[in-house]
Amino acid sequence: MPSFRVETLINSPIDYVWALFDQDLLAKLSPPFPPISINRFDGCKKGDLVQLEIKLGFFSLYWDSEITEYFQGEDTIYFIDEGTRIPLGITYWKHEHILKKTNAQQTAVIDQISYSTSSKFLDILLYPLLWGMIIYRKPFYQSLLTLR
Image (cartoon, rainbow, N blue to C red):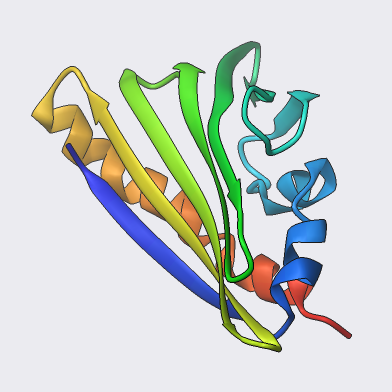
């Protein structure tokens, strides 16, 4: 099963960073193409649902996820979303969103992705697309989550 991890250091305390993990941040992290609409965003805690619509001209793809785990401690906050309706031939999707306090004024934002499709070829084909979708977030994380 393919997986990858992207880590971004943010010069802000963990509580500040966590307070900004909301629908507005998700909208700002979405790439400009293809356009994505957030049809539902319950939040980032266990049982919450997120429904996205990816618009491709005259048709749309839908990406639905459920938050299956949530934890908040002093030095770590995380939640996991797992795909329930996933496009592009993806049969399994797990995205771990991890915030780790590195010191009093710095937080690591970690995106850990695991996915699979029905074929090894498609797994390999989608890897750069999915990795690019997550690496695209790094400068936005740094810009939007840094305490000013």
